[in-house]
Image (tube, rainbow, N blue to C red; front, side, top):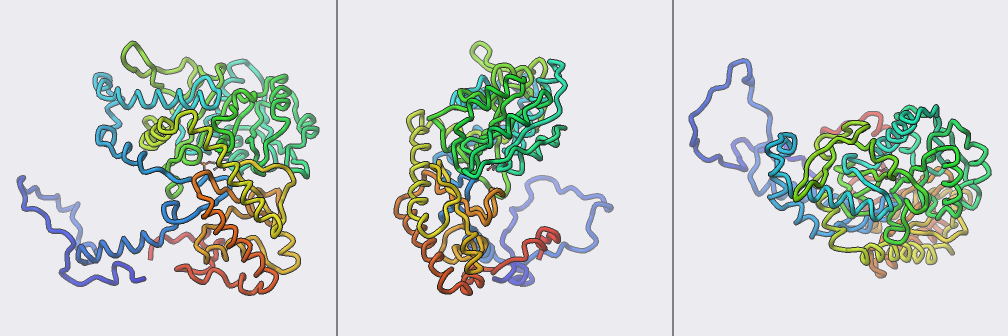
Length: 478
Ligand SMILES: *Cc1c(COP(=O)(O)O)cnc(C)c1O
């Protein structure tokens, strides 16, 4: 595809400006360019075609099935987009909220924040929530800072956080940034946490335990309530990584399992766009004992309206304004639209779909675990790698040629050659069947014609990328 600069013809213009209706002002000389900027000179039609074609090369949930495990790439309903596009919200200047007299103009936005925080707290069995963190990982950092503030206020001397070996890499990173030493707890061969190893690691210096449930193997931790009780005996707080909430939303609440603090990924469970690394939203939920430490300012219901308050022992502001408010709007619309019954249905269908895919593929691919999967299932390509030299990466690349996005590969790290598939509740049986047929065909080719898989993808705009070099020598220009 040609670059837009290559389509440039001197004198072509995409826009014509209206004549001035204000007095012309002159720029000071020192601010003027010496030479005109080198811009593409193209017609409006060329611009439209160029960017429409580029957008069609994008791989997204609006165009393709996207079974990326742990990421919950569900459909983002357009109803929520139209709510977010409402000018009464979209044109609200964020600075209005910080100017006392103008806060009356923000009452509608404050109501959304307040209601959504209450909905999220209710869904997860927490006492309160804050929408400030702008990504799941940012929620983790906020949560670990809350754990730290809690122990400081109590005079507890604790410096360690326990994290399973199956955890997402952001968990240890967040704990470390909050100043903690991370101790890894191993998993058992069946994919669940090794409770004996956990007991051994659980000393008085443990400030918190970070878990996700179901864990990143897609399995519900059977001992989660016992783990929480043991942690609480040494006054360690339980952190819930909410990335997998889609598996249990409406059915089971982290607060009832014994968790004290958590994050939600609105862009996973609550159907807001993932975007290109954002804008995300990773609100935190907390049990009663952590409410005084929440980030400020908080929206507080007072009489008929809302005002801003600072929690007594707040850890401070952790994001500009109120986090990604436009994303919060979409999640709020989604939750109100589905209601409690609809949210339960989400978890049921997400689990059903993952188990359907697992049942169809387990004859051809090695299942990583024997237990009952929740909303995602994990396979290992290790046998195919050993016998036919076909790795998880080859399977992922070959899948791109069939029009499906690849599943997550090489995560969780505990499974060799792992392929983690999360279909989500928003896909039909026909799509799941087509995906399974594509995977079964690839598994057949791995045995009969492994070379063809090494060459994949052949139908995408670019073939295999040198990903290591791309990360080290990032060059986003042309
Ligand atoms: C996605 C994810 C995170 C981090 O969330 P971001 O919003 O991407 O920062 C944390 N833990 C797990 C298990 C995840 O899947």
